[in-house]
Image 1 (cartoon, rainbow, N blue to C red):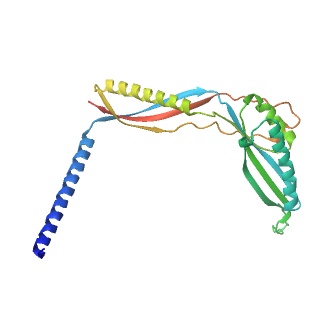
Image 2 (cartoon, rainbow, N blue to C red; image 1 turned 30 degrees about the vertical axis):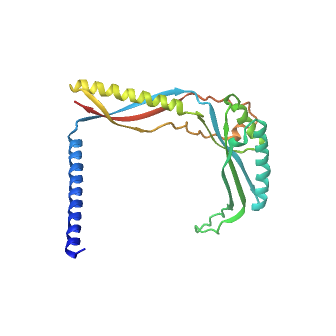
Length: 249
């Protein structure tokens, strides 16, 4: 093929590609202009469902000290084994017990301060081992007894207790539906007040969602030799927040 013909074909192809690119840019610009000119109403809505929690989460464990790390670890292992055995006796499933913290660190003696404000460097007097687990109690009517028993099992550390809904998704779906209804109700009020008509929904977005009740701190030593701990699960609110963008006429 002659060189001149090849150059001509390449020039034609480049011109065709340039025309396509220009057309796409014009189309995109027109679409954006139309979007900018479209009149919309943005409104938010909230849906909320109140329910009773059906599970509880306990943070508990054992803290031990010893002159050596090995001594502290051996004491902790023995105590934690008793806690695990006690939880099993309370019919807590193994899958509902999970180690959440394990640490070994030195414990220091702080030397007294001299009159001139100086003092010797701290001296290691022993080691501390901390082993903490997260326990899920699925039968809330047994929760008070489990809390009481944990101390007798050997637990001397209570991080806290919290309540939750085991399967919140159906309730969350209900809250989502209520949130959309709330948003549409507000949109109608605004449209009527502005003497405009609502058109189609352009977009829907959701934010937030279900969050279990926070864990409340407890002190294990305060429960020693006490009656079964009274607990009240109360209620929990499952909510959803949505935002609607609706065309107006």
